[in-house]
Image (cartoon, rainbow, N blue to C red; front, top):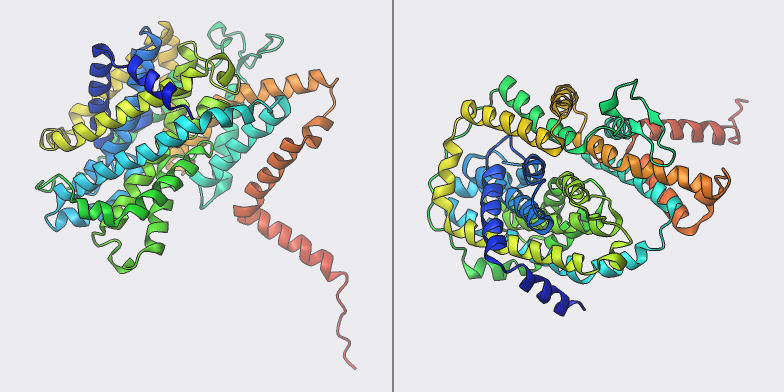
Length: 509
């Protein structure tokens, strides 16, 4: 089942250099996740630029450790000051902070830490032992299927990140697809939308765009909308009670499975996973009235779900080169920068890399557990750093991370431009994730569409007749029609008009 391969990969990473890197990156991730306004996506994007010249395996393990640490770290501020450090921890506030108000802040942190580790363990099982088989299935995908898969990823991401108005999510996603068309196209190297600007011939640089959307936008938003932080609760006992964990074993397994499943959906993210897991836990609970008032079940479900989603989001990165969340999108870009080529051929060209990434994820999860339980009081002091000091530091790191990729001032301008664009989009409630996903998947969509047309002399028939393509088309149609109220109203009016022609009219005698 791959146990031997996983153990060998783990032993290969057990060097002093990598172990030290895992612990400091996880610790930095916890701090990034804990400080409101900073996100896992921003942290990974900044580190990607700073580790560009590093050896591949060391750089990737640092980014994975940052990812794991940041998603967990957001629970600290959610519990102590009722402000989620990252969007993934919004559900943690619901029961975490009430527990803190009851004088159980330390216990809540301990439960959140242990639940996060158990969620990561469930995700590790699927990542290590099922990903290679999913990769074999993905080998059946050709250009036609990849075209529909990328389109489905953008649409489902827009649907789930803007549930009140999916149209805004789709507009954001298609804006990202359009921006991805800038530069030389991949097949004939013909420049598009560059308007004579040589710096645009290579397209929009991925990392500066990501840093701009998630880093610069946060700096602008925090500066313009000065948010007040709540009072920090006192921390007591941290180690969780074994009884609480044993009483929640069904909840932990269910929430972990939900997190892994949601993570595999392209571009959705940990915030959706935590709320879905929380909702299922409330429905299954014998005491649903305690939810929202300091329920250990609710806190366990939220933290297990969002951390299991981290591993789930990495699975499609490895086998399909399609990210399962915004931080995973940056991780995918980093793998490309460091010479790896995730996708269906990975199981043939570098099958051991899947186990190596799984081992990196395991090390980061263990580091998260150790640091989470042992350094509570030290880390909590960082919450008192004023934003007037923090935001200028973030701005400098955004500029340095963007410049470090290629040494171009133009990339800093791209970062600033995306930050300026991202703020009004966020104010108008256009989600960030579909735009970034569209920017990342745009080249794949364009290249596979053009390659499919070339292979079939311009015929579109294979795009609509192959079995996997048909399944993906059905999923796209379900995505479009299931949640959009405008389309539902239009279809409803059309249906009433058609059936109205065949209804008998009552005749008054």
